[in-house]
Length: 182
Image 1 (tube, one colour):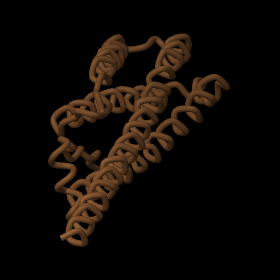
Image 2: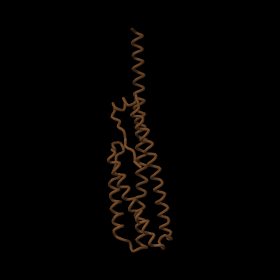
Image 3: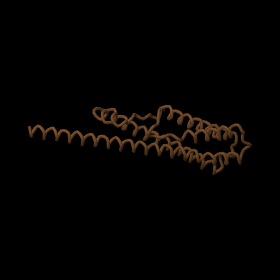
């Protein structure tokens, strides 16, 4: 009877230690994912901060089409409001809205870059070349950080969906997180 009680107690202790360890692992993975999301937001913010420089440079050298300028300002404003996504409770719809706003902004900026072809003197201006290099660098950073975020989400989703960790994840409300598409 005593040996059975001790064996049962040992099993309970091992299961509790395992459960606590799994729970802490989920929390650590979720925090890494949240930190990766912060980096995604940082690089998108960097790109958004570059846009007033583009507008100033292009506007000072061209008789700039007001519709393109309005499109950029509106896309930038929409992107700023869409940037408020909580990574801990993010849904696929919220992430899709964020991506759509980013795409609108990127398309508007690309329209300006293409329109610069009409102004050969502007292409040679140092401030425009500097902007273009910074913008391309921002786009590369965005790709890298989105990839890192997706890797963190993959690790997190895998850990909460794998047996027997999914039991602990289900008990404590850990939910799968959405990926960036494309």
